[in-house]
Image 1 (cartoon, rainbow over the protein chains, first blue to last red):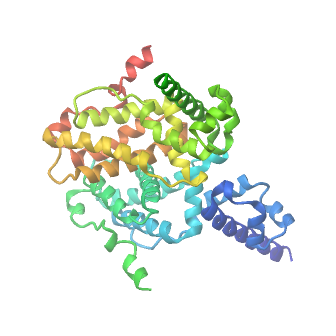
Image 2 (image 1 turned 180 degrees about the vertical axis):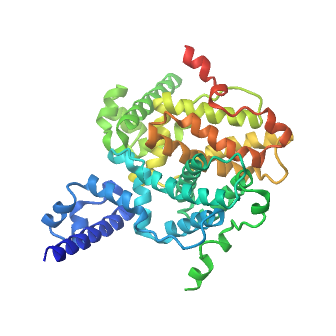
Image 3 (image 1 turned 90 degrees about the horizontal axis):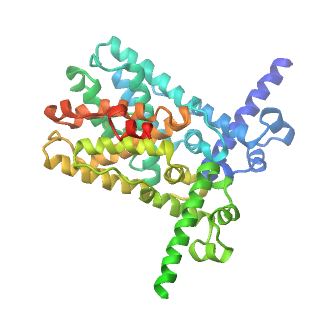
Length: 213
Length: 213
């Protein structure tokens, strides 16, 4: 019985998070309301309050759950997978409203009084692990500092997606990511690796098969 | 008489913009109020309404005025000046609240229903002009597309300052800008130019003299 109850609580929390993410994606933090989110999630005030005490707490949770809302494609760890993931995330930002909400809240968090870099550091850790794998595969130039470059990449990527969102509603994001890589890769990849890498929107992240489905 | 009146109108508009920028920097868009800004600027409701019809219009104006609130250091156009300006802007983001407000509003504009990339494109134009000068001075590698790299740099810079603001309140922004340049410069600068460029916080943007004053 206790297990069933816990399972239901997990499902309710998940339903609230999804409804909140949808509302925040459409309307932003100040535009969305707790009552609207409760209605969308089909939960009572008591159910909401059991999981989240305020809209700010809810927004914080959506921001931190951004990694749970995107399923990264499998692949062999290394530089190519790092590149593939950046294109995959670009496509997810275009089509996955729930993931997009987490990213939007991480960017606009100043507007509701948060200053928490956890969501950014989660990406830093992910990218760092792939860079460590790339180092082991002898794909990186000797001077590259894997930890430093992971931070640089998350910062550069965040601004690229922000600029693309404001300029074109993210329609040109894959092209902007390809341009960013074209100016970063020669500084990090071994010449032999550089000639083998694919860093263009057409060839990465399963864009072609998605478009066909 | 008409000229005096116009002059006064310009001064009033400027006073309102500065008061608004200070309020937005401290409190964000939703935290600041029109009445607070009127009080700080010392203007009446009529004076405010003559210049700005809503808080959103005011925030938009502060966002677009960000270039007026920062005086770029002089210097010979080219790659070194481009680098110097990025470090100078980093220091201004740390100490110039009015400039910082314009940047903050450009990042968080989604939260108050704007989607306007003008402020970003102003920086793209500025950077592009410096890259064209760098090309004329034969400082750029043949493959570099000046217009494209200007876009890449503004995107990467925007995210770097956002990440730094959330992670450390921008305390580490100059170091992050130096790291970004260390991975971009080898892809854009001629080898001869690369050895002569200074792209470290200590040597750029007059940090030393400011610290002493």
